[in-house]
Figure (cartoon, rainbow, N blue to C red):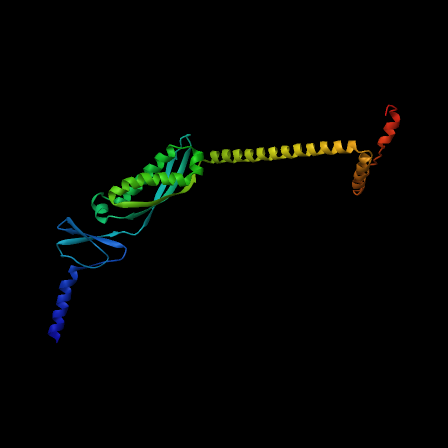
Length: 246
């Protein structure tokens, strides 16, 4: 019994090096004597040890930071921009053998594209069209990454920092715009009020006694608030007596 047990242990020890487990979310690139042979799927796989070498490649979606970059816009404003790249390896063998380090290449390409795209637009466009800029950068990087067996799923711009003096200028501009709108609204209100007053004056002047009633109403409203002023009113009929032509 002990003999068979020892034999089983020896067989396991001999077989284990020929078995390779690939975790879920990875593929295994197999090199036979240094040359690409095949790609292993997740699970238990058999390899010719030591003639074959297995390199695990992560095929899940990955996120990479785009380091903060200094870029100069089309209108010569310097700004600091950063972001992230979301990508996924579609062809593990191409990603391993077509380029030395696909992650470094993606990062470098994203940084270059970010500076180039921002340099072709104005600061206002950088601040208001983030989604369009990110999509443009994605197209540039994805074209290059496709040759490396990698798919760029998204590029997102995160922080955009502009100089302090530019921030103050933009704040002053925004304040001036708000003040302009407020003045326009106030002027429109005064215009409408003037039109209403003119129409009211025309109505009052056309109705006999209406102006006296309005005057009495105004006096009543004023008397509700205690005041040291004394107001004396003269009826319009008094002026009619002084003017015999009427």
